[in-house]
Image 1 (tube, rainbow, N blue to C red):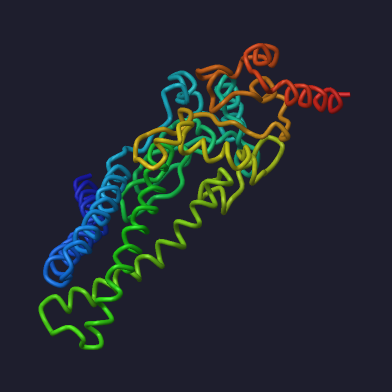
Image 2 (cartoon, rainbow, N blue to C red; image 1 turned 30 degrees about the vertical axis):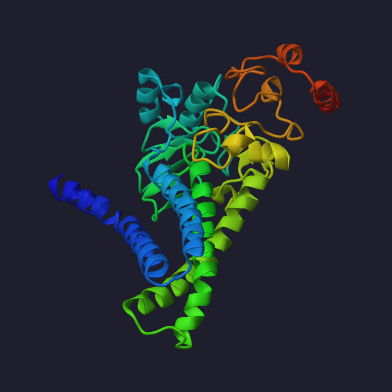
Length: 348
């Protein structure tokens, strides 16, 4: 046990190396831009002040969103998804088929609609919980993470339900930070490169700063564009590579609600908070809206739930019937009628 514990401590310590590296690069870029470029190189005071104001705006937002991504603990399933003591003891004694029967009974009443590739209830043997929809086990964090997107070594944290908005903003502000530095440094980069400015200690910093900013901008641009696409589709990185499996089969667009609603799922209803790394995402991470076209007899009762919340403002119990949802939701009468009609046709 002792060697394993020591190994774990070493792994956790080494995992901070990418974070330390990023902070060292950012710290150096701050010194190079503020001191070497603005103070020692730029002669015009108006240009110098304007550059510093915009630079510090991007710098603050970048650091804020970066550390919010790092410090936000990944959300894990609630106790409701854990097996009761009796069920757990029975589960450990039985074989695979009998175990599935136990899990199916335990999943009744839980907002769980996705399955494994073989149609079984998704269960984590490590955490001993029934996995909520879009939840996955992270071997690095050694825990199940709600709406897990991926584990990012650059933030030494899992990116998921609790910090996905912060991660997207971190990519956005880091990209703006880099492109602003590259754009404002370019003219002085050319002057140093063509020997129009004297060789001083600022030359190395300015030349290297441009290369580093341009390199990071290009690499972050592709990643940021990819995650914007994921937000628009309401998918995680895991779901982009492996479509979620519902009771009726796999559906890569199973959680997509249309572009505008998909964006609201991550950034919230109030647009004034979108640009700030403040938590505004919808739901609780345990249940999600699925498309009404994916007709699941057990899900029809909660087809109009919003992130597991009741039609008005709270988490909906999977036992809510469709009639109750009709009484509480305005503007969805057509969807309800369409769903009921299709269901009746299917049953007939």
